[in-house]
Length: 450
Image (tube, rainbow, N blue to C red; front, side, top):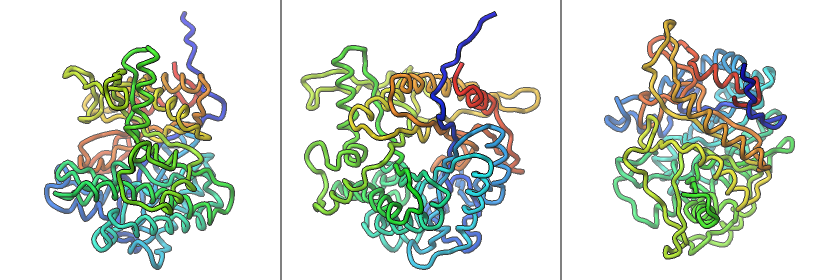
């Protein structure tokens, strides 16, 4: 009989799962909530696949107790969730819609009672519609400042119980205003000049800085504050020192607009945006306590002394394996190299994998109807093995959040792409754990991967 020794993770390692308010909550107009820019965007014909909208989501706003029961069964020690800005501040600023905040009070209290640490994300792409329509959204620095005030309110209301805050999620995505029909985020402008695009991205970084300031100024206990980035990940084409150094260079320069700027307080080359010394000083003052890595795929990099920064990005061949998203190539080692390079370049106090997961179909089932999502199990197992290596080498990785708990509204893909460990039946909204749910439950029980 074989004695399989699992890859054991450090004691106290956080095993979690993650969701985003707009994708799961539904009830977007309940209890005085304001309209979301995403709801307004999705209501336009043809903007979202099948004309789906997030109006119902997974009905988490009303069924959160069911979902908490699932988390307890799964055994997670942490839960990452986001707060709906328009639910609490329908106009972006001004009077608070207090009843909307009661939902998060109930959720936080129940999580703590269940022994699950809440990780609160201040902004996960959910902007009040009036902010987009009347202010110009992230084209206007007023949005970043107002988000900082929102963060201050969240600290005053919740930081007696919540110790971990994530300021913003994936700046490169929610500032993707200017890619027309390919834009991930509203308003998906048909035209946008380069200077405006650079300023939108920079305003997203300022949003992180303003939120950090607001959280720190209003904290009711010592907090751990970070941001969730989806940095371009890079894997050395070989194990040669030159290729490893080239991939590290790519990590710094290809992520210069967000990760490098936040961690270094400056751009690594010429400044691409008009900004003043005060704005850069604000960013430097908001250096995060932890770096949250959202890791899904990666590019291969080779040393190339003839290229401007000494490296060349390699294209994927046509037969390269991928999961059920056009950008989701399978490269599990990328998560290790991202963690390693972030630590080597910037020495954060802590690193969390704040998202990792994949979309795959629900077409394979057992006799009971349970989804046999073996592709997700393969993807997760391979990534966790590389994450274990990062821990074993001493990189300051403190936790892993699987994306995601529930099949949900996947932005412009509507409900057609399924990232969840739990299936949501379309008509009844019944929750049905998939095979991957059992796999991840075993990982948590063992604190390791076999």
